[in-house]
Image 1: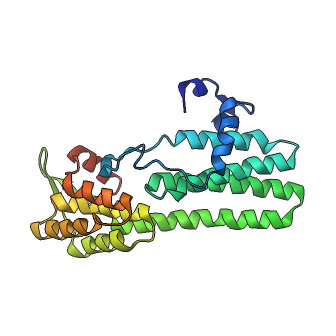
Image 2: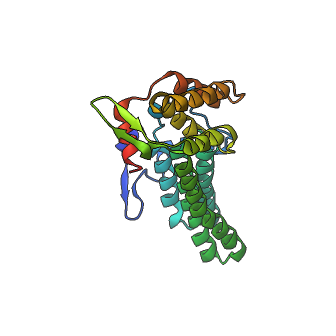
Length: 256
């Protein structure tokens, strides 16, 4: 969000900081949600393992909140539903690139708030059918997020990392865990989870036992030839670049 736009924030009693209903940025952003795809990688942000930059997700979050606030009490049902659907489409755009876990989760949140707003509006309109559809979509968000967390837990080795010196680490992952990460990196249907598995193979590549390092290197060599350019670039980067110790330890604390 630009500094100029931030200065135009107003406080909403439920949603917090939002843009005013007639803000020019909201009008400019409306057609953005009608596009089929949205890309951040690799044109704008490089693939760099644990150091991969993340887009400023405050921007889509603020846009969606502002559209919701604009029509939560609006008299025009059609206009309100249009804004609520816009928030959902923005969530879909965040998910469709399928590169990072955090953008995917942010997309889920936009979908949830949009569908819940449609549900509330449909009930007020007496449109039972629309309310039922919105309720069905909203009910899928929590299970899908839980599934993402479960699959991430299966491939992450960060909880097995310990510091053993000023700039030395020890990885206590066993071969079964590493093979699970290799399988996910090669076969998962979700690119974001393949990428997470690849990052963890990069950790093994530098911090595992010598046999584990060789196992990870061979897997990353194979993935580096993937027809998916994002997967190929992620494999090459994590094969060739040792993860920064400080960042690795910070990330590991999340899984302790």
